[in-house]
Amino acid sequence: MEKLRHRLEDNQVKIYFTSICLGAIWGLIIHGISDLEPLINPALALMLFVTFLQVPITEIRHAFKNIRFISALFISNFIALPLVTAGLIQFLPDNSFIRLAVLFVLLAPCIDYVITFTSIGKGNAKLLLAMTPILLLTQMVLLPIYIGVLLGNNVSKLIEVGPFLHAFIWFIIVPLTLAALVQWLSNKSTSFTKFTVPLNLLPVPATALVLFIVLASVTPQIRLAQNAALQALPIYIAFAIISPVISWIIASLFKLEASSARAISFSASYRNSLIILPLALAVPGSMPIIPAVILTQTIVELCFLPVYLRCIPKIFPSRA
Image (cartoon, rainbow, N blue to C red):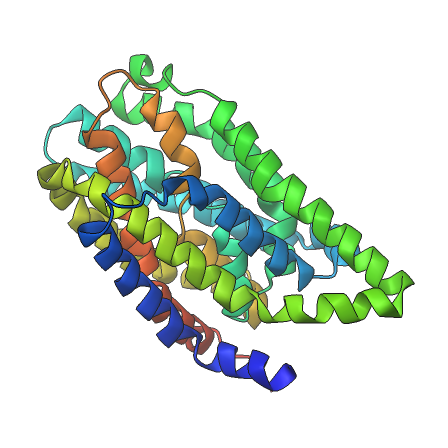
Protein backbone atom coordinates (compact mmCIF):
# COMPACT_ATOMS: atom_id res chain seq x y z
CA MET A 1 0.00 0.00 0.00
CA GLU A 2 2.80 2.41 0.95
CA LYS A 3 4.69 1.55 -2.24
CA LEU A 4 1.62 2.41 -4.34
CA ARG A 5 1.26 5.70 -2.51
CA HIS A 6 4.86 6.65 -3.28
CA ARG A 7 4.39 5.69 -6.94
CA LEU A 8 1.35 7.95 -7.18
CA GLU A 9 3.23 10.84 -5.57
CA ASP A 10 6.31 10.32 -7.76
CA ASN A 11 4.16 10.41 -10.92
CA GLN A 12 1.67 13.04 -9.81
CA VAL A 13 2.78 15.70 -12.31
CA LYS A 14 2.23 13.29 -15.23
CA ILE A 15 -1.12 12.23 -13.76
CA TYR A 16 -2.30 15.83 -13.39
CA PHE A 17 -1.15 16.86 -16.85
CA THR A 18 -3.00 13.87 -18.32
CA SER A 19 -6.15 14.78 -16.36
CA ILE A 20 -5.99 18.38 -17.60
CA CYS A 21 -5.62 17.29 -21.23
CA LEU A 22 -8.38 14.68 -21.01
CA GLY A 23 -10.70 17.15 -19.28
CA ALA A 24 -10.18 19.78 -21.97
CA ILE A 25 -10.78 17.20 -24.72
CA TRP A 26 -13.93 16.00 -22.97
CA GLY A 27 -15.20 19.57 -22.65
CA LEU A 28 -14.60 20.36 -26.31
CA ILE A 29 -15.88 17.12 -27.83
CA ILE A 30 -18.15 15.19 -25.47
CA HIS A 31 -19.61 17.91 -23.24
CA GLY A 32 -23.01 17.91 -24.93
CA ILE A 33 -23.51 14.24 -24.10
CA SER A 34 -22.78 14.44 -20.38
CA ASP A 35 -22.60 17.57 -18.22
CA LEU A 36 -20.11 17.11 -15.37
CA GLU A 37 -20.58 20.54 -13.77
CA PRO A 38 -22.79 19.25 -10.88
CA LEU A 39 -19.89 17.01 -9.85
CA ILE A 40 -17.44 19.87 -9.22
CA ASN A 41 -18.47 20.61 -5.63
CA PRO A 42 -18.69 16.96 -4.47
CA ALA A 43 -15.31 16.24 -6.08
CA LEU A 44 -13.76 19.28 -4.36
CA ALA A 45 -15.23 18.21 -1.01
CA LEU A 46 -13.82 14.67 -1.44
CA MET A 47 -10.40 16.01 -2.39
CA LEU A 48 -10.30 18.31 0.62
CA PHE A 49 -11.49 15.55 2.96
CA VAL A 50 -8.69 13.17 1.97
CA THR A 51 -6.23 16.07 2.14
CA PHE A 52 -7.34 17.03 5.65
CA LEU A 53 -6.84 13.41 6.69
CA GLN A 54 -3.12 13.85 6.02
CA VAL A 55 -2.96 16.81 8.42
CA PRO A 56 -3.10 16.20 12.21
CA ILE A 57 -6.19 18.24 13.01
CA THR A 58 -5.29 18.61 16.69
CA GLU A 59 -2.13 20.51 15.73
CA ILE A 60 -3.91 23.17 13.66
CA ARG A 61 -4.38 25.51 16.64
CA HIS A 62 -0.60 25.89 16.90
CA ALA A 63 -0.59 27.60 13.48
CA PHE A 64 -1.97 30.80 15.02
CA LYS A 65 1.25 31.25 16.97
CA ASN A 66 3.26 31.59 13.74
CA ILE A 67 3.06 35.37 13.36
CA ARG A 68 5.71 35.54 10.62
CA PHE A 69 3.77 33.10 8.43
CA ILE A 70 0.47 34.89 9.00
CA SER A 71 2.06 38.26 8.20
CA ALA A 72 3.68 36.97 5.00
CA LEU A 73 0.43 35.30 3.92
CA PHE A 74 -1.68 38.41 4.34
CA ILE A 75 0.86 40.85 2.91
CA SER A 76 1.18 38.62 -0.17
CA ASN A 77 -2.55 38.13 -0.77
CA PHE A 78 -4.06 41.41 0.37
CA ILE A 79 -1.37 44.04 -0.28
CA ALA A 80 1.26 42.92 -2.80
CA LEU A 81 -0.93 40.94 -5.21
CA PRO A 82 -3.77 43.50 -5.28
CA LEU A 83 -1.16 46.10 -6.29
CA VAL A 84 0.07 43.74 -9.03
CA THR A 85 -3.54 43.20 -10.16
CA ALA A 86 -4.24 46.94 -10.23
CA GLY A 87 -1.29 47.31 -12.58
CA LEU A 88 -2.21 44.37 -14.79
CA ILE A 89 -5.79 45.49 -15.47
CA GLN A 90 -4.42 48.63 -17.11
CA PHE A 91 -3.49 46.39 -20.05
CA LEU A 92 -7.09 45.16 -20.47
CA PRO A 93 -9.52 46.72 -22.96
CA ASP A 94 -11.88 49.36 -21.59
CA ASN A 95 -14.65 46.82 -20.98
CA SER A 96 -16.16 46.93 -17.48
CA PHE A 97 -17.32 43.29 -17.59
CA ILE A 98 -13.86 41.97 -18.48
CA ARG A 99 -12.16 44.14 -15.87
CA LEU A 100 -14.69 43.21 -13.19
CA ALA A 101 -14.26 39.49 -13.92
CA VAL A 102 -10.47 39.74 -13.70
CA LEU A 103 -10.68 41.66 -10.42
CA PHE A 104 -13.19 39.19 -8.99
CA VAL A 105 -10.84 36.29 -9.47
CA LEU A 106 -7.37 37.77 -8.96
CA LEU A 107 -8.25 39.58 -5.73
CA ALA A 108 -9.57 36.45 -3.99
CA PRO A 109 -7.04 33.89 -2.69
CA CYS A 110 -8.05 30.24 -2.99
CA ILE A 111 -9.36 28.35 0.05
CA ASP A 112 -10.18 24.97 -1.47
CA TYR A 113 -7.86 22.90 -3.67
CA VAL A 114 -4.84 25.04 -2.79
CA ILE A 115 -4.68 23.05 0.47
CA THR A 116 -4.30 19.84 -1.51
CA PHE A 117 -1.76 21.31 -3.93
CA THR A 118 0.27 22.69 -1.01
CA SER A 119 0.30 19.31 0.69
CA ILE A 120 1.36 17.49 -2.48
CA GLY A 121 3.96 20.20 -3.21
CA LYS A 122 5.55 19.57 0.21
CA GLY A 123 4.33 22.86 1.63
CA ASN A 124 2.95 23.36 5.13
CA ALA A 125 -0.71 22.58 4.43
CA LYS A 126 -1.46 22.57 8.16
CA LEU A 127 -0.56 26.25 8.49
CA LEU A 128 -2.49 27.21 5.36
CA LEU A 129 -5.53 25.18 6.40
CA ALA A 130 -5.67 26.97 9.74
CA MET A 131 -5.73 30.31 7.91
CA THR A 132 -8.60 29.48 5.49
CA PRO A 133 -11.40 30.93 7.64
CA ILE A 134 -9.49 34.19 8.07
CA LEU A 135 -8.55 34.30 4.37
CA LEU A 136 -12.21 33.85 3.45
CA LEU A 137 -13.50 36.48 5.87
CA THR A 138 -10.81 38.96 4.84
CA GLN A 139 -11.57 38.67 1.14
CA MET A 140 -15.30 39.04 1.88
CA VAL A 141 -14.52 42.40 3.52
CA LEU A 142 -11.81 43.66 1.16
CA LEU A 143 -13.13 42.53 -2.24
CA PRO A 144 -15.91 45.18 -2.39
CA ILE A 145 -13.45 47.84 -1.19
CA TYR A 146 -10.80 46.97 -3.79
CA ILE A 147 -13.35 46.77 -6.61
CA GLY A 148 -14.88 50.05 -5.46
CA VAL A 149 -11.48 51.76 -5.60
CA LEU A 150 -10.59 50.34 -9.01
CA LEU A 151 -13.99 50.36 -10.77
CA GLY A 152 -16.32 52.51 -8.66
CA ASN A 153 -18.62 52.03 -5.67
CA ASN A 154 -21.69 51.21 -7.78
CA VAL A 155 -20.00 48.02 -8.98
CA SER A 156 -18.81 46.97 -5.52
CA LYS A 157 -22.40 46.98 -4.18
CA LEU A 158 -23.18 43.99 -6.42
CA ILE A 159 -21.05 41.64 -4.29
CA GLU A 160 -22.96 39.21 -2.01
CA VAL A 161 -21.67 37.08 0.88
CA GLY A 162 -23.80 33.98 0.18
CA PRO A 163 -21.32 32.11 -2.05
CA PHE A 164 -18.52 32.72 0.47
CA LEU A 165 -20.55 31.26 3.33
CA HIS A 166 -21.64 28.28 1.21
CA ALA A 167 -18.03 27.57 0.29
CA PHE A 168 -16.84 27.88 3.86
CA ILE A 169 -19.42 25.36 5.10
CA TRP A 170 -19.09 22.75 2.35
CA PHE A 171 -15.39 23.05 1.48
CA ILE A 172 -13.93 23.72 4.93
CA ILE A 173 -16.27 22.93 7.85
CA VAL A 174 -17.82 19.68 6.54
CA PRO A 175 -14.69 17.91 5.20
CA LEU A 176 -12.60 19.18 8.13
CA THR A 177 -15.14 17.85 10.65
CA LEU A 178 -15.30 14.48 8.89
CA ALA A 179 -11.50 14.26 8.79
CA ALA A 180 -11.29 15.09 12.50
CA LEU A 181 -13.89 12.41 13.26
CA VAL A 182 -12.02 9.79 11.23
CA GLN A 183 -8.72 10.69 12.93
CA TRP A 184 -10.35 10.47 16.37
CA LEU A 185 -11.91 7.06 15.60
CA SER A 186 -8.57 5.82 14.25
CA ASN A 187 -6.88 6.75 17.53
CA LYS A 188 -9.57 4.91 19.47
CA SER A 189 -9.78 1.71 17.40
CA THR A 190 -7.08 -0.27 15.58
CA SER A 191 -9.72 -2.01 13.47
CA PHE A 192 -10.96 1.37 12.23
CA THR A 193 -7.37 2.33 11.40
CA LYS A 194 -7.21 -0.58 8.94
CA PHE A 195 -10.30 0.83 7.25
CA THR A 196 -8.75 4.29 6.88
CA VAL A 197 -5.37 3.17 5.49
CA PRO A 198 -6.66 3.01 1.86
CA LEU A 199 -7.81 6.62 2.19
CA ASN A 200 -4.15 7.65 2.30
CA LEU A 201 -3.89 6.62 -1.36
CA LEU A 202 -6.58 9.07 -2.47
CA PRO A 203 -5.05 12.59 -2.45
CA VAL A 204 -3.44 12.26 -5.90
CA PRO A 205 -6.37 10.42 -7.61
CA ALA A 206 -8.90 12.78 -6.00
CA THR A 207 -6.95 15.82 -7.22
CA ALA A 208 -6.71 14.33 -10.71
CA LEU A 209 -10.48 13.79 -10.66
CA VAL A 210 -11.09 17.44 -9.73
CA LEU A 211 -8.79 18.65 -12.52
CA PHE A 212 -10.60 16.48 -15.06
CA ILE A 213 -14.11 17.51 -13.97
CA VAL A 214 -13.29 21.23 -13.76
CA LEU A 215 -11.62 21.32 -17.19
CA ALA A 216 -14.40 19.25 -18.76
CA SER A 217 -17.01 21.60 -17.29
CA VAL A 218 -15.49 25.04 -17.88
CA THR A 219 -14.04 24.61 -21.38
CA PRO A 220 -17.44 24.83 -23.18
CA GLN A 221 -18.44 27.93 -21.17
CA ILE A 222 -15.28 29.74 -22.22
CA ARG A 223 -16.16 29.18 -25.87
CA LEU A 224 -19.32 31.29 -25.35
CA ALA A 225 -17.20 34.43 -24.93
CA GLN A 226 -14.01 33.39 -26.60
CA ASN A 227 -12.77 36.86 -27.54
CA ALA A 228 -13.17 38.23 -24.01
CA ALA A 229 -11.43 35.17 -22.57
CA LEU A 230 -8.51 35.60 -24.97
CA GLN A 231 -8.14 39.26 -23.99
CA ALA A 232 -7.80 38.26 -20.33
CA LEU A 233 -5.49 35.32 -21.02
CA PRO A 234 -2.17 37.28 -21.11
CA ILE A 235 -3.07 38.95 -17.79
CA TYR A 236 -3.62 35.57 -16.15
CA ILE A 237 -0.39 34.14 -17.53
CA ALA A 238 1.50 37.20 -16.27
CA PHE A 239 -0.09 36.80 -12.84
CA ALA A 240 0.80 33.09 -12.76
CA ILE A 241 4.44 34.00 -13.40
CA ILE A 242 4.63 37.05 -11.12
CA SER A 243 2.83 35.64 -8.06
CA PRO A 244 5.48 33.02 -7.14
CA VAL A 245 8.17 35.70 -7.52
CA ILE A 246 6.28 38.04 -5.19
CA SER A 247 5.79 35.23 -2.68
CA TRP A 248 9.51 34.34 -2.87
CA ILE A 249 10.47 37.93 -2.04
CA ILE A 250 8.02 38.18 0.87
CA ALA A 251 8.84 34.72 2.27
CA SER A 252 12.53 35.62 2.13
CA LEU A 253 11.95 38.93 3.92
CA PHE A 254 10.17 37.09 6.73
CA LYS A 255 12.84 34.35 6.75
CA LEU A 256 10.29 31.54 6.62
CA GLU A 257 11.45 27.94 6.66
CA ALA A 258 11.01 25.99 3.41
CA SER A 259 7.62 24.32 3.92
CA SER A 260 6.01 27.55 5.15
CA ALA A 261 7.49 29.51 2.24
CA ARG A 262 6.06 26.94 -0.19
CA ALA A 263 2.64 27.36 1.40
CA ILE A 264 2.86 31.13 0.87
CA SER A 265 3.82 30.55 -2.76
CA PHE A 266 0.93 28.19 -3.47
CA SER A 267 -1.52 30.53 -1.75
CA ALA A 268 -0.29 33.46 -3.80
CA SER A 269 -0.54 31.49 -7.04
CA TYR A 270 -4.07 30.08 -6.68
CA ARG A 271 -7.28 32.08 -6.78
CA ASN A 272 -10.84 31.47 -5.58
CA SER A 273 -12.43 31.12 -9.02
CA LEU A 274 -14.84 28.26 -8.27
CA ILE A 275 -16.20 30.08 -5.21
CA ILE A 276 -16.23 33.54 -6.80
CA LEU A 277 -18.19 32.30 -9.85
CA PRO A 278 -21.68 32.14 -8.22
CA LEU A 279 -21.08 35.61 -6.80
CA ALA A 280 -20.07 36.93 -10.22
CA LEU A 281 -23.11 35.38 -11.89
CA ALA A 282 -25.33 37.58 -9.71
CA VAL A 283 -24.06 40.66 -11.58
CA PRO A 284 -26.76 41.87 -14.01
CA GLY A 285 -25.78 41.20 -17.63
CA SER A 286 -22.84 39.04 -16.59
CA MET A 287 -23.50 36.26 -19.11
CA PRO A 288 -21.53 35.11 -20.99
CA ILE A 289 -18.48 37.38 -20.55
CA ILE A 290 -17.89 37.34 -16.77
CA PRO A 291 -18.06 33.54 -16.25
CA ALA A 292 -15.95 32.92 -19.35
CA VAL A 293 -13.25 35.35 -18.21
CA ILE A 294 -13.22 33.99 -14.65
CA LEU A 295 -13.04 30.35 -15.77
CA THR A 296 -10.18 31.16 -18.12
CA GLN A 297 -8.15 31.91 -15.00
CA THR A 298 -9.08 28.49 -13.61
CA ILE A 299 -7.64 26.79 -16.67
CA VAL A 300 -4.46 28.88 -16.54
CA GLU A 301 -3.74 28.12 -12.88
CA LEU A 302 -4.47 24.41 -13.33
CA CYS A 303 -2.19 24.25 -16.36
CA PHE A 304 0.55 25.83 -14.23
CA LEU A 305 0.12 23.17 -11.51
CA PRO A 306 2.70 20.72 -12.95
CA VAL A 307 5.16 23.63 -13.25
CA TYR A 308 4.55 24.77 -9.67
CA LEU A 309 4.87 21.25 -8.26
CA ARG A 310 8.28 20.91 -9.89
CA CYS A 311 9.59 24.43 -9.34
CA ILE A 312 8.29 25.64 -5.97
CA PRO A 313 10.07 22.92 -3.92
CA LYS A 314 13.27 23.84 -5.80
CA ILE A 315 12.79 27.58 -5.21
CA PHE A 316 12.35 26.86 -1.50
CA PRO A 317 14.65 23.86 -0.84
CA SER A 318 14.70 22.23 2.57
CA ARG A 319 17.83 22.97 4.54
CA ALA A 320 19.89 19.99 5.62
